[in-house]
Amino acid sequence: MDIHFGCTQCGKCCRDTKVPLTVAEAIKWLNRGDQVQLLCEASPWPGELDCEPRAANFKRRSFAVMSGAMPTRVVVVLAANVVGACPNLLANMRCGIYEERPLVCRIYPVEINPFIELKPENKACPPEAWAKDQPLLQRGRVPLDDVISRDIEMSHAADVLDAGVKRRLSLALNLTHTALVHEAVLVYSPSAQSLLSALSFATATESRKEPISQWCFVSDQQETLETLAKSGGTTQHLHAADAAPFQYLGFKRQAIFGLTIDHGA
Image 1 (tube, one colour):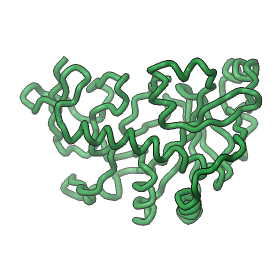
Image 2: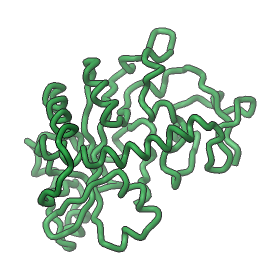
Image 3: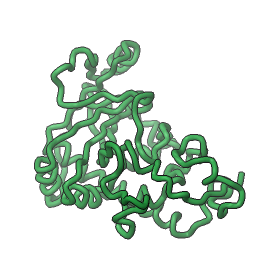
Image 4: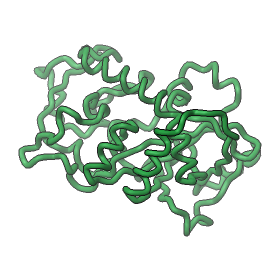
């Protein structure tokens, strides 16, 4: 299917959202005085998943851990927390950091995950942005803009490079709890100073073989907890995590910029 698109500068995609950032982008965002959060989700990882093409997208962005006796992979997303208008959105609805805006903003509304279909109804843009008289954006699942295609490749490459940094970042911040992929994310909100310090450590420290860390799955679904526990996982019910340093966001209650809730894993 041909998809036409032209930005109408409505600013809707720049409000009340969480913008996934690369490690380098997160450091810049923090240094501008704006908030960055960490979103954690994980999947049990039996060995056969390594041979599944649709699991490659999740594996590329994740690092290996254990949950009890269960092999697991964790994805940590660094995300700008945008409450109201983006701090870089100008009065004329233009981007104040357009030339150095995050990759996900450059790629939007195209899907970064090749297994996900671009559906206009899932995007913030108004109907007129998708009118047939707008430029042709995508044919089938292939973007026709070479710049967008290049940016998607850069995003995938950053995923691989950043995965090890995020593993060390998690150790520095003592992150040990996660939600189950497709069900929710856990949102950590460290202070800017703490996060910048941890990022400095994580990016300066060379990757080396370290003991696999232990993580615990948090859920508000008893069936999920029982299933994970039967597979050897460590679990905790959300109701028992009242004083925990994270927020639990089920997918029906969250808005994450540029991400359709299907990670292909």
